Image 1 (tube, rainbow, N blue to C red):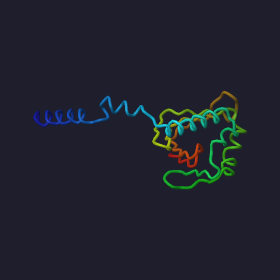
Image 2: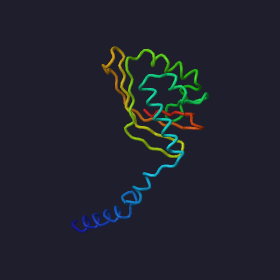
Image 3: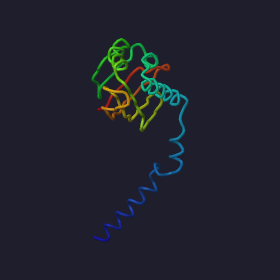
Image 4: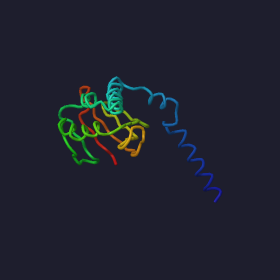
Length: 152
């Protein structure tokens, strides 16, 4: 029994040494972002700011005319800015407060995946009565959001 335990301990310690995720170089590599990734993240940062300011004009300006919204894996919810306005316009107008925060982000090329929290005030300003947490994938093309996938 002791032999098996020692063997497992040795094998697991070798795995940690051999795993590049634990090496300093891997950590340094993950901190380096391409210009495309920086640009994609900048679009999503602007989106969150527009949402939090409840500026429907700034919010809509970040989307492509033919933007597609999906519920994971491939259920099309709606397509196009006109549908986006129907979906979000009234919410921006009626909510007393809206706040979204990115709590974790993964970026690869023109894809930004955010783990986000959202708080809204439906009755009174400053009184948050609905909180949610979700993961959203954004695809950025030519500086505009062309595809959104919600994971729930």
